[in-house]
Length: 225
Image (cartoon, rainbow, N blue to C red; front, side, top):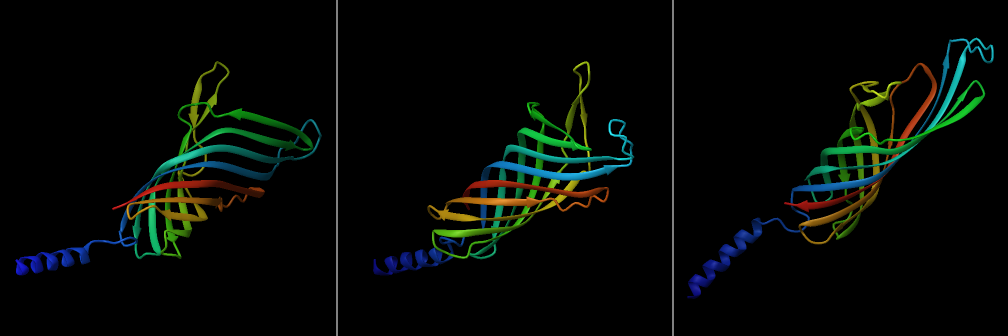
């Protein structure tokens, strides 16, 4: 009996030593949601005469604001208790936008909703994550970039017909930086809340200046395998 008990205890210790403990699980899967805010401002001088002002060129200055949301799934691999890499797919959608336009001193504002059901855009994130503490609650830092897949815009013709059009490159890489917090409820479930910022680094030589950024509050519910 003692021999059997000793054998069972030995087997339990061996199996237990190979089971991942809190912070040692390598793979995780998460679902994420985030409100988003986007801003851009640009100045463009077009060498076309403006008949209203008799100027030899047309100067256009724009400022745009947009609010929306994103949702998606992420997979993460932990190199250690502190370092990890993650990737996945985010689907983004704008709810409304406003654009302030100044054309050679004449200003006007355009405000419009995104009501079309297919105005989604897609991002493929690739992030390096750092969790400095191995306690349940820890700061959570992410740095990397997203591959932003070109989305369609629907132009409405005079007869009401919608024509899908696309502008720019098929995919644009945009840097991302996030700093927030991570909380582990147990060895299976975690919650990550992380404000992020993205800044568009595309070159636009035809513009005198162009600045575009997006802010979001990424909230991830994560399951550790």
